[in-house]
Image 1 (cartoon, one colour):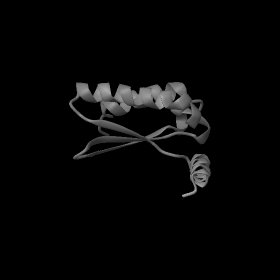
Image 2 (cartoon, helix red, strand yellow; image 1 turned 135 degrees about the vertical axis):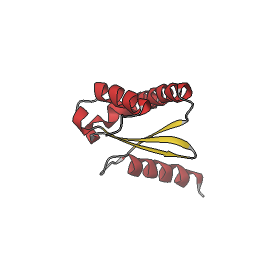
Image 3 (cartoon, one colour; image 1 turned 60 degrees about the vertical axis):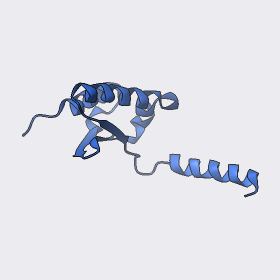
Image 4 (cartoon, one colour; image 1 turned 180 degrees about the horizontal axis):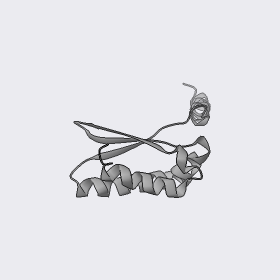
Length: 105
């Protein structure tokens, strides 16, 4: 098996040290003309720790990956996969509906 790329190793190490269920951490790596895309999947109960307050943890992870990418001359993007059954998107849609109702559009 080929050696795991440095960017994927860094992300895996940081994420597994933060979450409660490190065995559920899955990272998919794809390379195309836009750069490297790391897709992160974690246990649904660990999503709050990965996102952080107001997205601070997610932003920090992206900053770390940007530094790793700069060192290796690659553009690295992080996609945090939404777990199945998530209510976050429905809540956002309801909030948007309430705002647009108030505007009488």
